[in-house]
Image 1: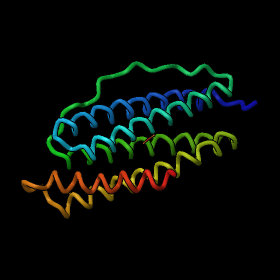
Image 2 (image 1 turned 180 degrees about the horizontal axis):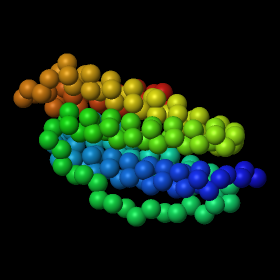
Image 3 (image 1 turned 45 degrees about the vertical axis):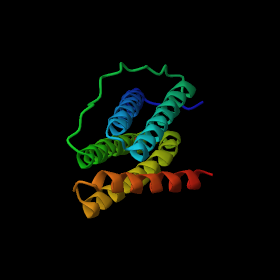
Image 4 (image 1 turned 30 degrees about the vertical axis):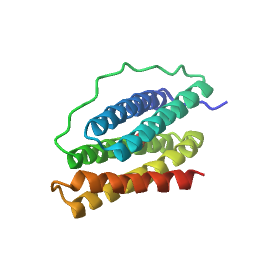
Length: 172
Ligand code: FEO
């Protein structure tokens, strides 16, 4: 059975909270997009919200398997209003960067502790964060090219719809 230090357990409890907050935040974003008539973006964020919940559950399981009771965090109300779709995706990137920083910190703690089981467990998340940041940076690059003119929401949403199709294809 994996034995983890109190410090690592605490850091993972905090990670559970962050993943849960990300899931809730993406849900709010999905319905902000819905309100703007951006169905491609809505679907994108609904999927993201589910993914974050799945990340959260992976950390729950890891603590449980390590004989540490996972603590279910309080849901805090996420931001629900955005200035523009660009503002929204910039916030997503900031959020993902905070998650990456937090995961990297647990990797560092695991390395110091010579806890190679936790170190190995975290590698999936390290790669996942790399992928997520690259996806959002790609979206922001496209928004920059399309611009924020009168018809931009339509074209941005079309781009996200294409991205959704690519993600679905890659998953199957
Ligand atoms: Fe699970 Fe996007 O952080």
